[in-house]
Length: 151
Image (cartoon, rainbow, N blue to C red):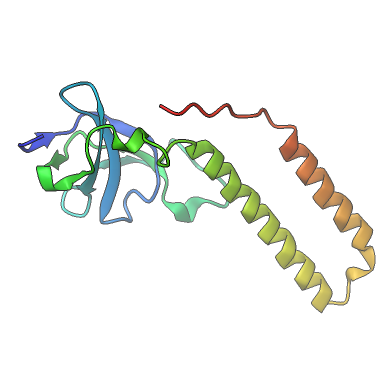
């Protein structure tokens, strides 16, 4: 791309939209390939739809549906070359990383709860809490496996 172009379309789960000054976006280029770019979201705010996704405990991430149709991208905004965003190691397996973050969050909450109970001297019910963690891990293990395809 050697000229300024207007974007068309949006992203269903745009993390940090409305809070970040630059949004990392992928879009099809003139050749049909994918190009990553850094959109100046502070200067040209995308239209945000906050009604689409209301996850409990993740409101602070500012992840909503965003329409970038009014945004202009210039050559200096490009990140790498067309197609770079699909080369490994790169941005594939996003759902797997998201699930890993959730698991880490769950374990952090469990650890904090255990420490809180330890300070209250209420660790006599240790077997009950261990069983709860085991059930949570079992439920996570029974989720459908994700087949990650590298493009």
